Image 1: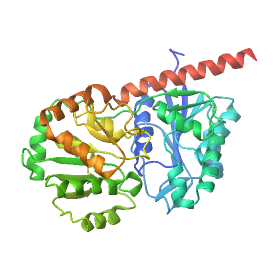
Image 2: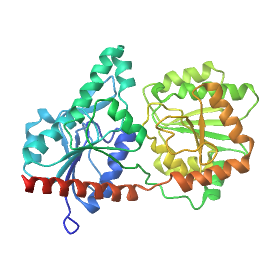
Image 3: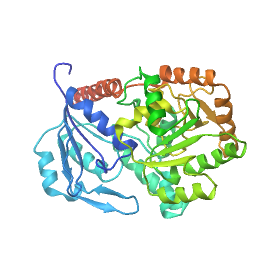
Image 4: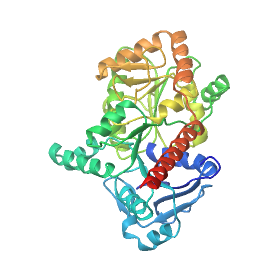
Length: 393
């Protein structure tokens, strides 16, 4: 297999121009995949959107889901799309989501007698519960996803904690561990970026800066961050907190910020920012605040580590996996009071804080290029194993 590029079909139910962690993951895989594999990406179509990516991508029919605020692929109902995909033969299919695209990929794999793999990205339990308002019905929906996963030859996860979660969905098959990374290189000019941030944002040299990066939704527990920062403010701690991103609860959380008495100079909801500004914001931040219990990884942890910026996470959370408290990041108990206390302890010793950030860069950073090499190697192994087993039959 070393001398021949395997032919990969890779897809998911939602995709660019919508942006989230899972889409970011598939997109970065594809940006590196196409150099190492014969890649075709499949995703839902968006009206008036043209792809400007270097890899091959084929779009299928889709529908808009207002409750989730994104375009959702309907590949099993798109005969033209199906025929176009079936006009080629693939070596393996890989899906990043467990819904329509997962069923479509299984159909292609069965027709072409090739292996099918999936990455288990998201804990859908809290999402289902928030939608159907019933724990019982949500659990039935979770088990339905588990039955879909059980039709796959192998599932990829990013950590043992996520593997446990995948098993709780009812999945019983093989699991492989594959890390997620960042396209941002390790920073070699942090002081220069800090000076740039101070100038452009009007910050004092010693001013405390905290950031959150991601979707602005209650599911991400930004209200928890605000509650924690309110405790710090009431104790006289001065800071600026930048919530970077956009989401369905953007306006609600701004109202909540105002209700807690934060000024627009203390808590800033930036909306989307240009990707070019991420290095500036990550380098300037003293801490990344990420108390999410929903995220199974949190790519922002690796992005912050690229700039030697440590994060504060919830102890035992998937987002905090790999973090050792006080060594390469900070782990808090799951209360605003404990989270505020952890932040206060971290900023009390700036020299120690800097050391923890450097350790985060050492321990938590990994590039998408390195992630993809491990990913491609695993795909090649699965294809080879599948072919060998087929030859024995």
